[in-house]
Image (cartoon, rainbow, N blue to C red; front, side, top):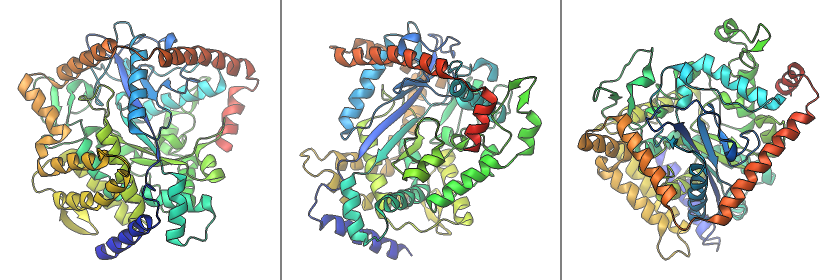
Length: 526
């Protein structure tokens, strides 16, 4: 089986090389969504409203909020060059920090000091129907999974391959399908292979092996203590992506196939349309107030948490699955990245370049359908690496057999060598190859992984997890406020966009004529 996979991969890679388009892998568009909790100088989650100077979260495309009013989300547009993306992310942080007063952006994925669910304020999006729906959805999430889960931050990497690549691949594959269907089919191949190999991303980039004990307020703590305020997994990489974070047991029964676009839409639609007795007990509309959008397994598509998902920019009021059915997959969203305390913007160029090459690997490798048994094994691999990824001799399930994780990781990185050389086409500094070599070093020396670095930093400094994260948060604030000269033109653009977003929200609220009950019924029935 493995030799067949390698032959198909090598044939497709050779097809790209022989196409005469040496830079055919270049030109993919990439963007980032980066979440951060707003906290007080003392490191406590703030209860203040989203700063008005940052715009209206409902209508500002680039500065919004996620689950909580205190959870800022910074969204870049797509760029062709990684350095442009990082520059934009740097500029937007600089703008935000100019309007935070004493507040800080928390520097890690696992949260600051919390005092249970009640300390986490729900995101507010105004009085319009769409704004109310967003807040009710978040209230429903809190009831279902606990609000503490939703104080976790992450970095999402959005990526679309170049149209030039699709044209060459159609020729190599001798595809007879419509271009839109071919592209969607190829993106779903990426999704399947990411499910197979995505554990590698947790090992290389996971930065959440520890958490403050306040995260478990009122719940049983199942992790060993590192110090008075920190619990941790001794060999963990990403608690955020483990069963104590987003991969919690509530969604263990939700199975969504990525074998095709039709299967994906079918399974998501079924979960959204199937009542779930425990959620029915909570109630939907109680004493005239909505507690959740419905009592089904999922309220809406976004509730399903996956490491990677297919995306298409939706029209106003359009459901994500309807957008995918209308026009196919436009890009993928990789959701498994922790916020890095070692990078002021939470991510760096080497990480993004490696991910770009890794997604190309997922695209070009053979990608057979995944059945229920294989999916359970893949989920177990992810959990194992999230909880024990740095453990010496760790073995994963590979095609039904135990296989050494380190050996598998080496194979995957070796397979990426040619892809990185193609991505480096025309670049004297060979940045993609350099990014690959940096990851190879982490395979050979586990102490180079960011999860190991975080624990080593805590031990050397004597800091608890909370103290380290607060110290880094303050350093990041000083860094952004000290940058000189600032990009005044872009800062002015952010200020104008913030002002425009308030006007846009007012227009939406003024235009609402339908009552909320019928608006919601229409949205869910669409």
